[in-house]
Image 1 (cartoon, rainbow, N blue to C red):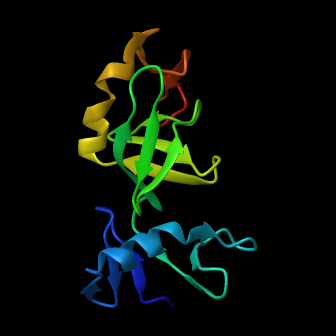
Image 2 (image 1 turned 120 degrees about the vertical axis):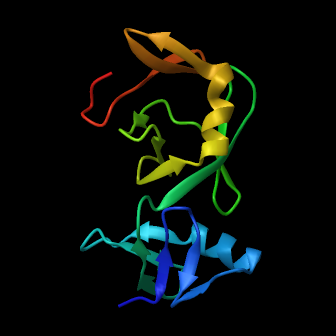
Length: 146
């Protein structure tokens, strides 16, 4: 069993100790993948791997950058990628998730990042959507409906 855990607030723990070194935290965040055989989360650095305990989502959006219609997502670990045009879901608790890394992993927007979505947010068909790169991107509920 792994000693490394990613909690629901996006913090890494090694055993019972919080990982405080920024470089180590950023590296861990970039190494998250799914094991090809069992689908469990792992940390893989190109040389070695180990299972990672994940409490919520394996990735976190820490900031939203750009200006409409362009949008980039800043992920934990300072990885930046263009906002996807699919995979946005509003959870029952009001938090928003999106599929990142080419749809491979789910990321939860931290409250500060979620609050930055205002310029892209529009009402659409009784729900909400984001206008990204001139496309209307629906935000679905956890049941897949708008």
